[in-house]
Image (cartoon, rainbow, N blue to C red; front, side, top):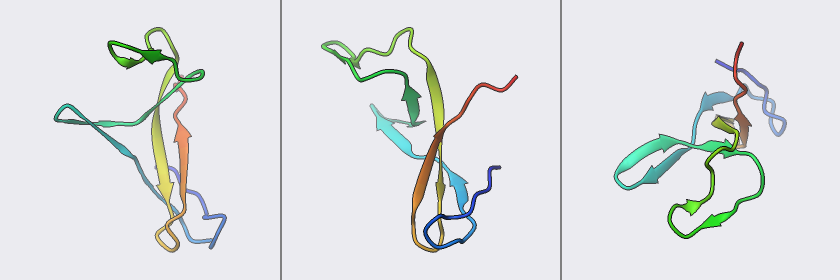
Length: 74
């Protein structure tokens, strides 16, 4: 669990994530390296690119959101 103090109102932020809804499934958002490149077949070209799951901290006081791409541990 990550902890942070809200830069707007100084309350302790809560960890969570933003959901992506796609074709009847719910998944966690991911950060993909580089600018988006369109693909006719898949919407975006992401094969072979670095991917990181995204967590988002939310302030329960003012609603401020702060997102992070998780780095590989190890």
